[in-house]
Image (cartoon, rainbow, N blue to C red; front, side):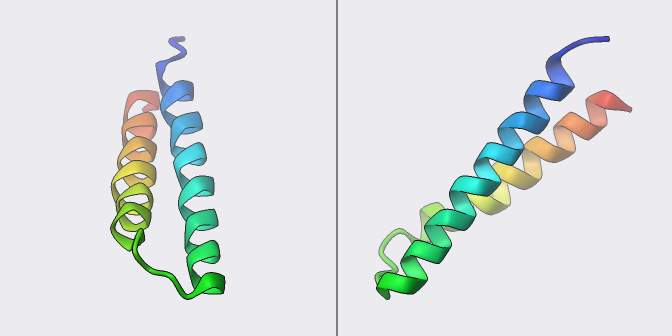
Length: 58
């Protein structure tokens, strides 16, 4: 079995952790200048990479 699905899923988990951490930090600081980065990491990073990993796994 290829390691590619595992790498996609690990990258997705990393994007999720970074995106959620950014969101929490922005909420605490009430500074939302990086909101587009947070949204793209969560939506495009986590979702896309997780779907690619699961698709390759299937």
